[in-house]
Image 1 (cartoon, rainbow, N blue to C red):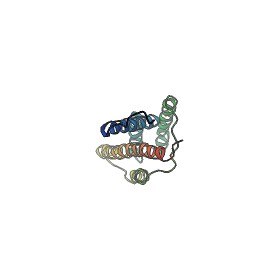
Image 2 (image 1 turned 60 degrees about the horizontal axis):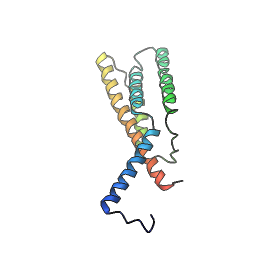
Image 3 (image 1 turned 120 degrees about the horizontal axis):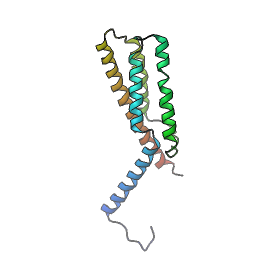
Image 4 (image 1 turned 90 degrees about the vertical axis):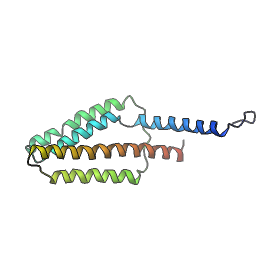
Amino acid sequence: MSAQQPKPSVPEAAALLASARRAATQSAERTEAPRYLLTWVALVSAAIFSLHGIIDLTVWYWSLSAYVALGIWYWLSARKRPKARTVLRHSRRYILFMLLLMFVMQFGNFWVPETPWLVAAKFLVLLAVFWIAMWAMRSETIKTRLEDGHERSI
């Protein structure tokens, strides 16, 4: 700001800061995986892990190939987005949700449902946990990227 320009008033300064924060948040969101892709990953993960112990193990391992299709879809969508800034350290909340995902996947392997209703219940429980944890991890990554960007602006 030069000496000739008048200082902005408090509401104008607050509006300018809010627009800068909105622009930074939108920029960080554009670098992350799209939300619909995370929803599909949660659906596929819940379906695969809810069938563990129900179907033949060979068929179950082949069902993991659905992740190949999701990986290709992610790779194709990532080429259109700007490159993400590397997160130097994740927040505690991110790590807690990652541990929750690992715990729930392990718990899902121990829970072998015997009726179709229990398979559906297991699917819904896994879907809810996967979906909430993935979305929370995505939002924490965006928040960490913003904080990291403010700390080390290059």
